[in-house]
Image (cartoon, rainbow, N blue to C red; front, side, top):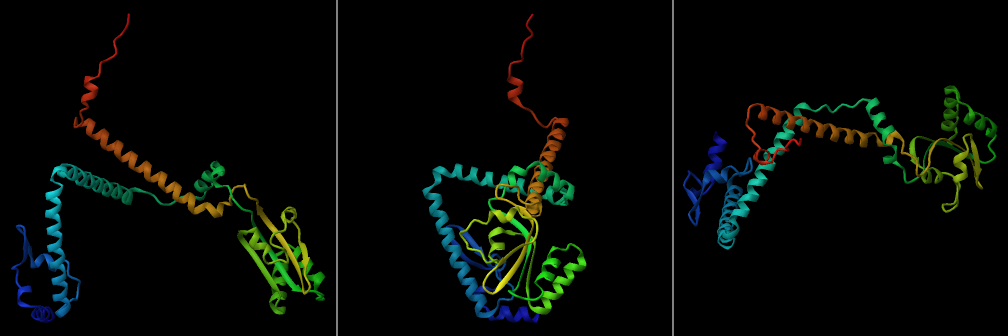
Length: 285
């Protein structure tokens, strides 16, 4: 209370009470209207400056509205129709959002996502080749060459852990691409030339080898999706969720509209005059 009193006391006297602050063409601005728009915590000179700016803008707005009404009075009915159309659209949108917020289920099972994916594979074609795999890079001539190759070829978890331990201890580069990446990105970690054709590597499922002047590379492609094939499910899961949500959204609104319609018809609150005036088909003998 004391702070509020002090803030008010810092304002000029004409910004206190509820006297009119401005009048333009019969329209009056009062202090309480300005106060509703004032930022919280504003006081003193800042408060007075805000009030003056608000009043200036209000005056200019009223003058422009008066001028617009004078120039466009002939189209006033069109403007009112536009305003009414906007009001109705706003109310309907608010009603639709109310039913969506209170009735839509946003959870989608893995089975539903998989089913949609299987049915719409043509909609998810990839425009580039994607791969999963791993790359091991170590110095050329290292004495563990055969051991590293055997560990790369092994499938047991223990062998994979042994390979990881050796690489970590000796600072060898072991890159694991457990998520899908562009094939070009995968190749960028190998001694390949950018513009050469490396499509033949995609057909190999085992461990392959490359080398440059200083290093040897063991690499393996564990999964491949070529350009033109369907994108992997994990890459389009969120897209499918949005699609299913939109479908569920539209179905919820359609059902609500149908319920409103059936209820209104049952209470005789709808009358379609054009159907009453349409000629009925006559039976021909």
